[in-house]
Amino acid sequence: MERELALEIVRVTELGALSSARWIGRGDKNAADDAATTAIRSMFDSVSIDGTVVIGEGEMDEAPMLYIGEQVGNRNGPSVDVAVDPLEGTEVVACGLHNAQSVIAIADRGSLLHAPDIYMEKLACGPELTGRLSLEDPAEVTLRKASLITGKALSELTVMVLDRKRHEMLIATLRGLGVRVKLIGHGDVAGAIAAALPDSDVDLYMGSGGAPEGVLAAAALKCLGGELQGKLLPEGPFELQRCLLMGIENPTRVLSMEDMVGTGDVIFAATGVTSGEFLNGVRFIGKERAETHSVIMRAQSRTIRYIRSIHFLPGKDIPQVATSRQNAALI
Image 1 (cartoon, rainbow, N blue to C red):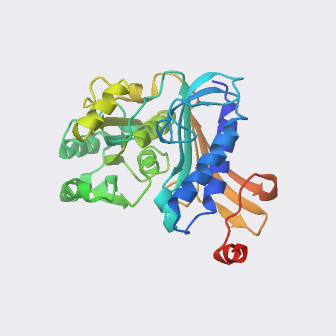
Image 2 (cartoon, rainbow, N blue to C red):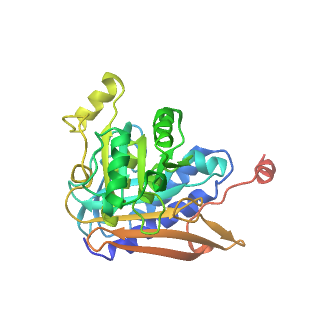
Image 3 (tube, helix red, strand yellow):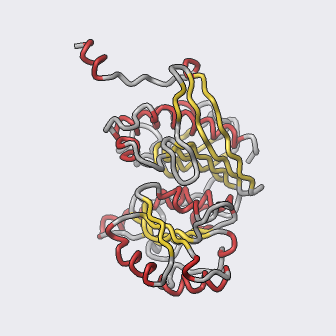
């Protein structure tokens, strides 16, 4: 893939973030998601790829755009798989919380796992621990291995976990070992990435979250030299059948990085909507400008670029959000 694609992709996530940010704190997660999705889909038309959505807003009969199998890009570029979450954290934006972002990953055609929208157990780490841990080990074994490899005492290790009821036993185990537990309310992709960022204090990311988010995180971790191991957690025969229909012959085996993102090049881009673990959110400056904070990463070069942009909003196709007073005037 051409390295210039990275800048083209981040322009897409920027517009998605700017569009959904208008809905921060307004209590309407669907409107926020629709705004991001519409913006990203329209912006893709200018990107020089022949892309196929493998992770998106759902199946064709469930989503009007960015559906699985949809062709995106202007066809004047490489054939690639596209994984996109126009707004990771719809409820986060609706409630004005942290860790919402617009996220895209692209890889050579046939590289990205077509992950069903179910839970996935995850273990993410940075370069120092890559290839040296196993998702199949109990948490205690994993932490003792990490301690030995890094030379840190258990009390010096930090594990990030989504703050969910399903993780109560995991959290209790970690704390029983004396490990620091950093809980996050939202942001499964950002949480996994934190384990591999050079300046992060997070050593591991553990627990379960969405499978599509797992593939997006794996794309970023490949760019960082880190690793994500995953295991799908189908609940009942319907979800099991869904895995099989998506070509996953053994849905309960541990998925490697190669299984999720292939062996070729990967480009990952994200723009913060609300501030989170490693990206600042959109900041509106007066009536005509807004600031965004994005990250672009490429597996081939292992380069991480942070981009702070100031946008002139009248030059962008971003719909305004009508206030209740404006709505009342229209009645």
